[in-house]
Image (cartoon, rainbow, N blue to C red; front, side):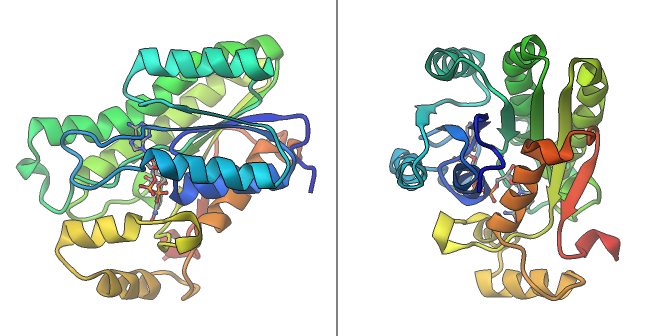
Length: 275
Ligand SMILES: NC(=O)c1ccc[n+]([C@@H]2O[C@H](COP(=O)([O-])OP(=O)(O)OC[C@H]3O[C@@H](n4cnc5c(N)ncnc54)[C@H](O)[C@@H]3O)[C@@H](O)[C@H]2O)c1
């Protein structure tokens, strides 16, 4: 219950889904929590991003667990908003021990690579790949000064494998896995670790307002139930992965239990990518 005591954990995209689960699991382990999300929709993203009230909900659940929480909206495509987030977080807590780069978008998708518009292609890379890089650019100097830190990039099995009609998402997540490995080498001598988690299909757990499976189903023009059935059939363990399963791996990477682990990917996919 105190594996992250005295650590400050910053999580992007924490308004719902996996990011919210990460915030709750980190709070259960006693961390001070910095939560951020965009709080508005983006052009070229064909579904609603987290509302401001959803980030409030994450804050409330973490506070109920008795930890300190700082909350601020920031768009990971905007360097000035990231800078304000990190500066205010440092003013509040004095350090950042863990960065969980979770903010991401699953669509535009659902068509062959040549049918993406430039805006659709660019937004996927801008949020899913350049977003984590911008966060690392803002937070790594702090961790280097501390001579300690853990950066956790929430990639995907789409960072390891191809998915038909998801070329932009797949390219962005492969890029994120590459960024993870190189940044791990850049900061290894500073005792700053960088790892990726590659979840397979994660079900839309109502507990954290999960909705990504619906985004995937809508992109492919099928019903949510059909997508859930496809997901279930495609994993080796024949069981769905929850946002909390992913968050538990993030807690381990955030904790000192993984102090000799850097530059790696951990799949949390019930065997999806082993097949
Ligand atoms: N759910 C899955 O099946 C699955 C599988 C593998 C990987 N992932 C990855 O996990 C991460 C979380 O996904 P999720 O399933 O919880 O989806 P989600 O849509 O519920 O959560 C993503 C969060 O990121 C936020 N966000 C989006 N664009 C942003 C921006 N520009 N700036 C700041 N915040 C932004 C959203 O508002 C949202 O709260 C993503 O990176 C996703 O690619 C999800």
